[in-house]
Image (cartoon, rainbow over all chains, first blue to last red; front, side):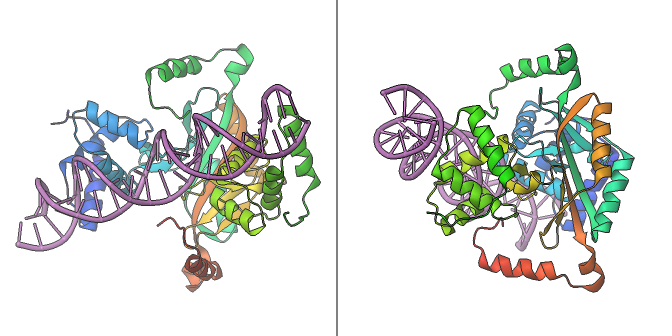
Length: 172
Length: 172
DNA sequence: CTGATTGCAAATGCTTTGCACGCCA
DNA sequence: TGGCGTGCAAAGCATTTGCAATCAG
């Protein structure tokens, strides 16, 4: 069995409600998947999640991982986000912060999450002005690291290099 | 030879400069591709562009289309945008309107481009506050059609249905 | 029991690449 | 002429799907 992990009550409840409403079934694989996802607040690709699951002792297959991710997205427990790397990325933090946005550093690939109420308000206004009703919005900012530019060094960049030496499946 | 199309001088110049700087070569295929792209202000996937090229009489291969799209993106003549449909989409309108954003109607799939200087300013501020230097930003809003909701009808939805009957390669 | 769910492997679909040939500068 | 660009077909890769077996309710 999978290692026990503390999880937000809120999430469990939301999922149970979704499962009930849809006439779905609770399975060990689904439990394991949401436990592993919400044990961290990190973004992930389906493949990364699959690896984490293996490490945690789960034997859920890739197919099930993909199918469950679709389900969780539909239930609004995770969101698909576009990090610009050509893969599907999921973000588990929309439950707590439904309107946050992402900044991607093009120097080191670091992803910063941020919230801004002015931004939210403005998006809402613009959408209504255009004759629509806002549902979801995703803002991605690509930026350079100011620290790297001015002082020539950035701790995240060094970390990123170390990381890329360890990991095999990279894009390019 | 391909049908002659009027094209923004600006674009031709920008491309020529990029080609010169990079030590690249001007070829018939590249000319055809940018002519077809900028003959319209519509977004497109690589595949749609390939079809348009065929219709216009060009025989450029898919491989060349993909390679050239990468080049044009690098030259900032087009931008890759995320419309949330799982395919690469390119937008040729960033030359004239470098900071525009996209709203996607989930009812009919219509994409509305819009600009808002407040939004641009706010994004800029937020980015700097976080310690970064803004490069590109992409905001996608998913929304419902207000007209459809209130009056039960939306001209774009009807068009979308007609269109989907004609086109074969759809996502789902 | 019954239908939802899973795992496997095969299929799919978009995109990239290796290579030999052709063509621009 | 040198080497960039092209077309073709093959490869790559993430994701989806058909199907038979399994399991939850």
